[in-house]
Image 1 (tube, rainbow, N blue to C red):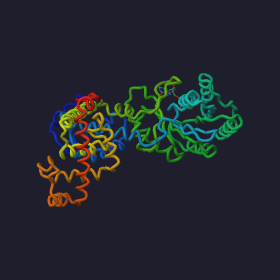
Image 2 (image 1 turned 90 degrees about the vertical axis):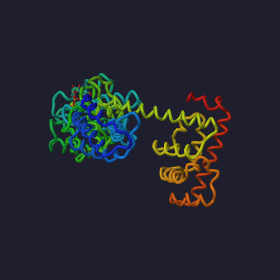
Image 3 (image 1 turned 135 degrees about the horizontal axis):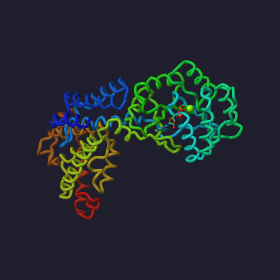
Image 4 (image 1 turned 135 degrees about the vertical axis):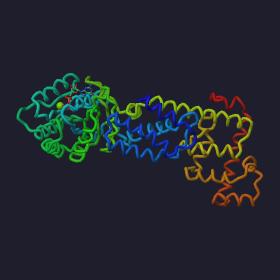
Length: 442
Ligand code: GDP
Ligand code: MG
């Protein structure tokens, strides 16, 4: 795959902004990569469409190709989607004890194993008293399996009473957890080979009986399209609060992670990385994104190119500052950097001793819109005016403000900010090497 990608990207070597054709070409390869990673067809298509729109028009970093740039954009977007904005991504939400946690999923997905792994984690990391109960009345050995795991990890399991239904066992687990003062009780349900009505009705009844604080869907990370159906069904019928992806220690690229996020909108909380009881890890979106896309080389190449350019630019500005120069072009540069980085960390953030100024600009409430307007003002100045803004006459100010569609007061604010910054620069320049170079730049 890498070879094929390399070929496509070599052809795209123009610089500038990404046009639709650049993006479309690269996104075809991205789509293939996603499908090869077992991302579901519809999820892959939707993701590709969304990123296409975002990527078109974005600037291409010098020394990388548009195709490479697209991969980087895809990679970042993938991380964003995978991460979501859930605060409980790497943890279980546990309210007042005894907190019920319901484990659901197909047979063989790793429910029982994951139940025990999570119990161990809760016990060891959070000092919780955990009770596990097997509601698997389907397979004779299932209850013993959980019991054995419980002994291994030193977590109690609910005693087995033959002949009880899943709901009866759940009730008993709740009573026992309440009476004996457990913090958490975990309900390991039976799975089926595929979704069926009996399974759903049973899980639903258990849910109604216990009102779980978390309902965790356990999904085999190696399954592709099927995983989506499973997730959709469980989510619609029982309502899940999070996902654990198992078998992420295998060869699969883990595309199910993206599908799960897209289909359920629920966080992926953990990944299973083996059969052992501590083979459970918090979900790391960056790692999984890299694996799904399988284009890590390209991503790091683009990151490096961007860093180099920023470092060079910082160095160039440093030289000017040291010489006591900070004109409107420098200011514009800084403002554009801020917009690009989506925040107040521009080049200045990289310069030692600039933190204070950065704070001032923060305080001035410089959001994207304001930044754009300020850049527009600078753009409507002449070259000479940008170099020496102090020479601006009232009539010129009016013209400039009008040219940018703003008031003279806006321009005055900008000029004042520039003066303050230039003054600060001068002072720092005087401090010379000692003050400025400490951070190791230049
Ligand atoms: P259940 O039917 O959903 O309860 O699935 P089990 O917990 O019984 O697991 C089925 C098999 O998958 C067992 O052999 C587990 O050891 C294995 N398994 C579970 N999680 C993982 C994992 O993260 N990685 C690997 N390699 N095997 C796993
Ligand atoms: Mg089981």
